[in-house]
Length: 357
Image: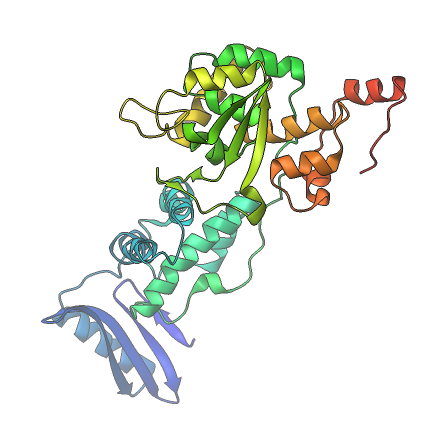
């Protein structure tokens, strides 16, 4: 048996009648992991460890929750302050810790998690959630290794993940979008809804749209898309892709309503003049469409709805792709083109040209 562990410390055989004893103790320099090399039999080494335990103020190995709160999370916040990770990444890690990692592992001493337990836990989640949860747990273990609490990261090994799930590819028809407009009218979701469903903007682009970037024209409004609202509440001109900085167009009657709603610096802003947060908008959207019995889909599905409805009304894919800010039509066809059965039937009956995907 190469190693014998307890909540106090460990006895590891390093060679014939040669052992390494390691334990945690409070020292004048703070709490440290101490090591002693011992020559003798295993029983003598264990007896020596018992002597150390009696003479040392015992304290358990820190829990994974303590390592996360006291060391890893502050490190991630520091990295965010240095712009080495994005706000979105920091929030994703934090939410995953709170939702899935902490309930299972926060109270567990860092040296007590078994690979079999980690494997069992990962199989309770979908593949995408498991990948992110494992990454967060692995970051915590890596911090424990760097602090000298552990010798190795148990998450470094290969684990099986749960089944992959795909988000349903939903596109709202023009009739459903009319119903949705009535449902969100007068709420904080109305302006972003109009910009997404009828101009193809992303959630962050719609929530960060500045009034000065809305240019009234005859029969429409031209949208100069050059900024987006980030999850930390800041409006940034750092766009998702090079093609995201673009010109979009919203037709009547939706253009007039957007101009009517745009009374301040931003088209959709709070009383203090700051943009309404994306999370507030998407939560309101979900509640509104659910209340009127429409299919409940993420607000992001409004962009594919815009592209699908334009395309199957006869607008070439090259043009809809450009309006969306895509640099290649392949992306648009594979991920944003979601015609309904009625749209397919109408194309055939009208002898329209079917675009093969």
